[in-house]
Length: 83
Image 1 (spheres, rainbow, N blue to C red):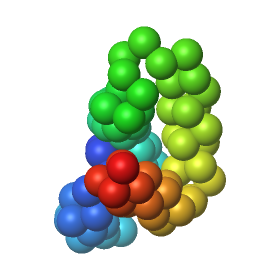
Image 2: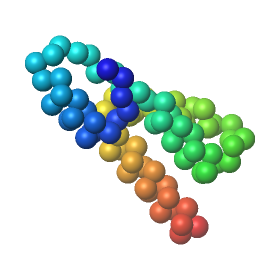
Image 3: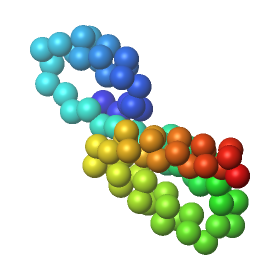
Image 4: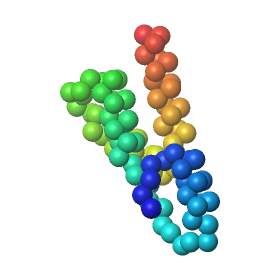
């Protein structure tokens, strides 16, 4: 089953397929799109380090460090607002 990261969908799936063996596959396409939007907003679309930034943050998310990525984005946003 391929789905995005919406927790309520995964919970519903577990309920609907209770007793059925299945493999859940996380669709990360939207996550990558959101990361690109964030880095382009921060650095502009021509930022030379954008690709590495997206790679690093996506890797952190895939390693279960989503909270860290969110906290870093909030911190960056707060610094940008003060500047």
